[in-house]
Length: 155
Image (cartoon, rainbow, N blue to C red):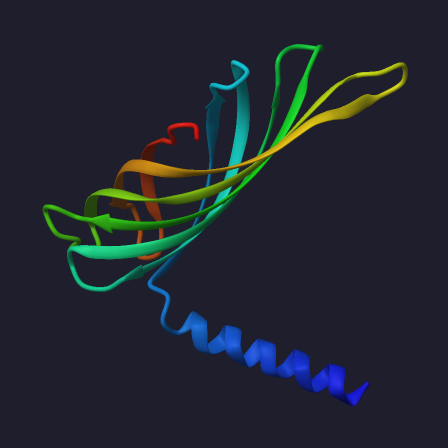
């Protein structure tokens, strides 16, 4: 029991040290179009960003999505992205337009109706490259309002 408590404390200390080097944590909601099956999905994302200087930044993002194609298909998605951004006009913390690219690992699970519930039938994992344009505006000391467009060519 002591060993588990020590490991837990060591992991929390690691997260506290990591949190001191992170510049911002973002959460967002939006919609995604899964072109493989013409499905719209509601997305929820959490992103951690590190600014290396006023022009270059990097981020790690975890996204969850749920959608469907009417009553005939339900889809659940999970994605993990690692991205590098360039802010061509600089990042002055009030306005930040940035262009980026990175890798994305996406898991997609499709379900179709059975007799009583949706039965999972198709699961796939894909690795792809992202192309991202994002604009952030500071609306309060700690709050950003942003708009993001992202495309991931299928692989």
